[in-house]
Amino acid sequence: MYDPHLHLFVDDAEVDASRNVTPTIGRPERRSHDPIMTADQPWEGRGVGMDLSILKDEASGGFRMWYRSFDYDSPTGDQVLLNYAESDDGINWNKPNLGQIEFGGNSNNNIFHRPSLIPGCRAMESHGLIVDDVGGPQRRYKIPVYHSFHGDQGNGLYALFSPDGISWTQHPEPIYAQAGDRHSAIKDPVSGAYWLFLRPPRYHSRMGNGAPPLPYKRVVARATSQDFSNWSDYTIVLRNDAFDTRGTEFYNIAPIVYGNRYLAFVNLYDTEVERMWVTLASSLDGLHWQRPFRRERFVDLGAEGGWDDSWVNMSDSPPVREGDRMRFWFHGREEAHAVNYRTGGIGTFVLGLDRFAGLSAGRESGWIVTDRVVAGGQRLFLNANVRNGSARVEVRTSNGTPIPGLTLDECDEIRGDSVEHPVTWNGSPDLGPAAGERVRVHIEFSYGQVFAYRFGNEARDLS
Image (cartoon, rainbow, N blue to C red; front, side):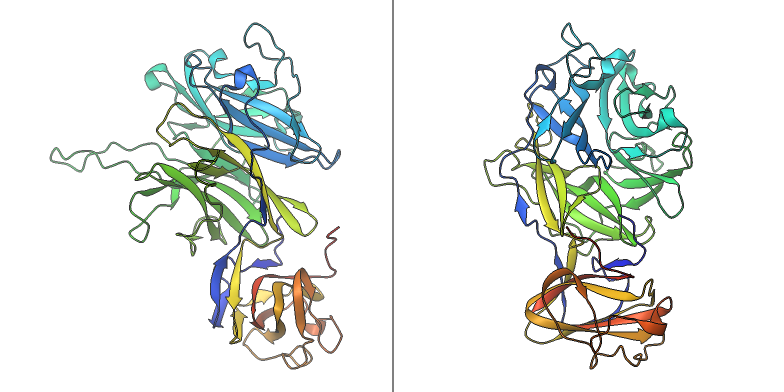
């Protein structure tokens, strides 16, 4: 979903000036009331999800899921398993018999990774899946997993590789020794490097003079790699601060590349009440993150007493586009973080295309002037809901001078609700000499919300 010419109003990083507008986080349009997948197999215990990656198979049009099950009544090493599922629509899932790992006396299951088969391994966590051609056909599918061992020798992140997403082998040495048990990975389309977002190794350093260890706090760090095996030292990129609610920590993030930036679904853990929900962060470089909605919930807990009323976290995969909507998946459960007796399932929701967040205006017209951006196409499209109002757009030179033929007065009024309003001036959509140049975009609107704008040569197919 990388598009350098799609600009989202999820923060003010590319906004030079604005007036009479209010940042507003996106809201799911439809959310499954009941889980679309539950634990219904003996090896799955009481819960599925927690960690899951879902990709759409462009060849078949179907969906593939790699997910974790958990059963704390099982012996150590078998409490957490990795499983595989398939679906035609992303909602109704089947669990095929892979026939490759024995459990309970036979191999009739959909398990593809069982930690107890690794000598001394007592626990496992997995987050994120990447598919590419780096490393050859046998390493086309890549998953980072956390393994912990009896005695804690060898703890850290390891890599699983597969040619088909079904049969997996484990890299023999940890790719990040002593890293924490929550992580995620993406491939950066700009640099071509892999980015690993992880909990750095816990520090137990003392401040001197017999002082106690520094208190442990969950933070998010980033390391990079060119081959998925050898990783750089980490840099902490997200940590809670004095402006956050007391007791909240970053449990982990689900990062995606979207438009011309990086987004992170932050699984925010409130240690005071033992609950977790999802907030939104954004970045232009993957190192410096903005959280304008730090106290607002992108994905909230479910209704009290429901299957997802205590814990929700996002899948480690980008959304899948369905026409002018995006489909997401999430894990939910009704037990607190520290409770071992856990159930859990997988849910889904849809959101308007590119509508993670936006800027809202009311009766008094609001306006936005962007920083300098490259007009990467012959046309401009506006993602806005102005069904109760209207919008106009002006294109300016990099120094702020309105370009004749592309001014507010010449812009044809935009009305309605569309993720792809074509912007025209006196009936023409052509940006003319502005195409390919560094420009500023001036948007004026009322009674509505503006989510994004995009330069391109033609409208996207939203069928």
